[in-house]
Length: 309
Image (cartoon, rainbow, N blue to C red; front, side, top):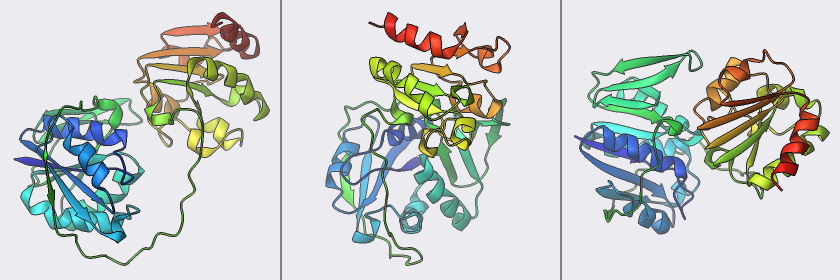
């Protein structure tokens, strides 16, 4: 029994989500192999070989893998699938684009966004926006699984896996990379941040979001938002936390002016410590908050900044 993890990377380094997927793969039992499909990706392969628990790193190198097009990476995974009992990838935009293609071609059911491995064939995953946990048992010969990164600790370093080159699968040719626009920020990336300061509809306007910036600066935090704030045009889409946004689980999550709709809670309720600031004492956010402050955010946030020195 051997698991294959499709690594998310930028050819130079691994994305943090891959480390969580490796932890999940190790819990499935047996060896763990990591697939690096890329171009000039030796540095990413070297990084994968140093992860504890990884037995082998498979490197498929070709120019058409450079930008991670889902069709091409899925074809590479399918070329290797015969030797594996489990194929996993992180439940990010990258993994969610690749694995459904793999599952369909293998004619098996994909098991999505697992948060726990109960047995090699049995997994837990959230349903109904995280209000219930389904236990899923699969009888498929190959388990195709996306891993919710907040459910598993990142794999540690300290490994010394062998690196093996494999023949690259043929280019599918159904899509072509055109361009990529990457949002640049001096703040930590939202899904990897240890502290997040989020604002909601209660902020009132895009201009008012600047009230949160000194707090985020003091804490070295990423900034997030509820869907209501994003839909209102206060902040960019890539700030959205929630069921239809980014799933996060930082050490500290500060929710300011967020009522706590079920869709938002689904994206952040696994945070280690939650602090809520809202003028409505009945706001649902207080049901998951470890610390709650009832009051005017435009008075409370500056006071918090002042107390932080």
